[in-house]
Image (cartoon, rainbow, N blue to C red; front, side, top):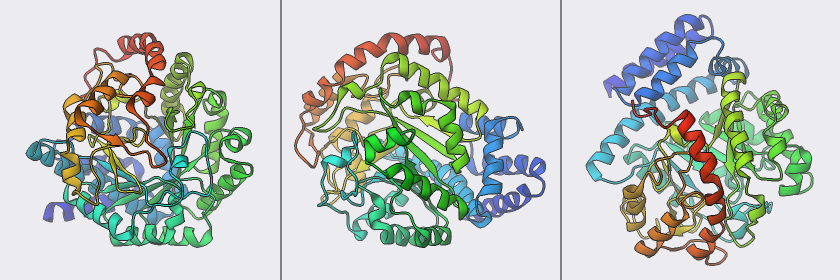
Length: 450
């Protein structure tokens, strides 16, 4: 406790100094992070240090944007929470729990406060769930408290549209100031009153869903949605509140969302990060024609890496960034998903479960046969550009579901593992050649563990 208080004080002092003397403050802040980390996450810390100490790096530019565009009190509180509680202090406890308990302990927990949504977007798993299910405030509070006991201080809301539960979300932020909360949202429910509440609690960040230009976004989400989400981002920016963007990229919107014009527009709007999600053929209305081609995915691979050098925004492509996390992050290895019915899914895109939080503790879910199958099987491929047991290795998901007896947790109607994986077989086969070439050329001989 004393060490944490000292670290807290040091980080706060360094953050104050950043605004007047960043060249002196950054090394001091990084030294403090090394002290807090107690030897954990060495490669990540080296990367952060190298980029922050390089004034020409995009991370340095992103830091300058945070200092100038985000409310100072909000910025300081959120950086401290992420640096100490979420990352280093939390990670150390998670690592200890992993060794003690012999199972996966997540870094983040995704949960659906509600299955309700005011939109019906193509390719969204929530569109299948209907508007009838909710986790109660007490359910969510219990998940957060159980997570904290395991060292988890990062909670992400999916759905449904999470902001239908705005009051409860703010109440949870207020109850847990040592946690960070993020929400994927369509942005249509953001108003000035909500911005005031977000600024007050200082630990909530939205990720707005934008699928490219107006035509692409409205085609997937409905007419007029693009203008509404742009208005929400502008309102957040005017209030000095941080936010990012989430983008599902498909064969149809690929050209738009992989362009420099797109990411430059996000920066102009004020977005600090953009997370790309590969279209997954999940649900009763899955359209395999929307899955990107190997050539398109390779372009995205190179584009994201170039943006990390050139653009003052943090871009991430979950399907193409496997080398940074050594493969699949699901099954509690770095995250798990809890739907609005309480089913614990190993992955937000793979709706099979053998546990429910209304019947088991969070730890018991992580120790269930299905979650242990993930634990024992990861990584599912030595080529971390083929990380997923569904999309790139469908035979692995088939085997795990059959062996553990996990049931479909699709809330609209049951989907067999064969129905799901059969949509991925052709994709997996076609991606192998490109993935292996990229891996051999860029990553096969690298050591990501030190």
